[in-house]
Length: 379
Ligand SMILES: Cc1ncc(C[n+]2csc(CCOP(=O)(O)OP(=O)(O)O)c2C)c(N)n1
Ligand SMILES: [Mg+2]
Image (cartoon, rainbow, N blue to C red; front, top):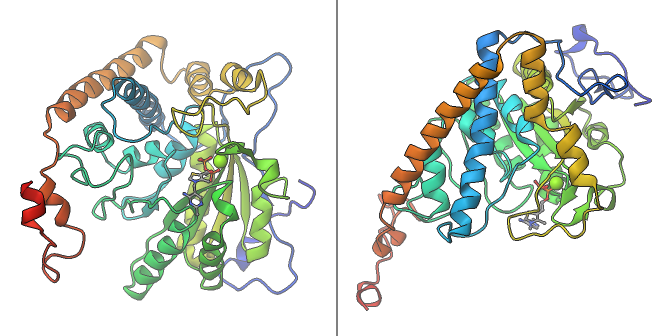
């Protein structure tokens, strides 16, 4: 970055005077490993060993749940597609882990890890993907299209960009109720090209709402490479258009993602206003399981798998810093696997939804009665 400037912490509470240089922070941006060495994670962290192992558990949970979903999909038990976050799990897990329990987030399809951090169990995900009655939406919707206000997780809708103004509204409402919460909204490199993204972030920036926007630069939107999606080199540059600070973070370094989000959340909580965080990562699978990725240059996926896998990097870090040995990590993985086996069994034993239930929960049934059409349903 040519235009990196330092924060002036004494100015945080004041409105930035017009013309002051926009700040893009690159402390946790991707760095090349020293010659011949494999990538690890940043050592600049306040995380304690038990928290590091917590992060490891969430990373493995995300990867193994998704692997099981692919198995279920191939058995034709999944309704709809399976959307993987393979290779970018650290972005969702590290950023969500930096929030406080009262904070809200709204994930995208590739942020399953963030949903787990917010307290959703694998069984809910399996039942939801299989459209079962015991799933959180009772079979009405699929994948991670559900929410839990109690857990601080606003369910996403399909329309890209639209969750930015929704989270902005959540934060405006919270401010009016004098609640000090921070909101984290995820967006893809593709989703950033929508009007809703611009309107939502602009409003949050003007209102100095505590909104964190985490932009996932994962190189593709469907089959469109990011270079054909936007004219900027770094998505963080877009922060300048809103007069807010931007960060670039190594999205495959779970510790870096945690640290950057934590700092951004602290600044937002202290009335610093909205922050744009760009995570540099890579989508190793296609848009969904059906996508054969023929548009990806040869060797690109292999390179990321061999040299920049977020779980491999974190395992290297844990070993280098003697946080955990191979055996302890294998135990964590085995306990995750046991939980997954149990939860798949539970989800598979769930009935399919009762057709009549589709009429309930569409509107608030204490105000609008369900639109039942018994004659049609009887047939
Ligand atoms: C407004 C809108 N336009 C198009 C789509 C169809 N669509 C769904 S996902 C997707 C690509 C998203 O790419 P990106 O934002 O980079 O996220 P990623 O899939 O890489 O995580 C598109 C075009 C949509 N859901 N909403
Ligand atoms: Mg993308």
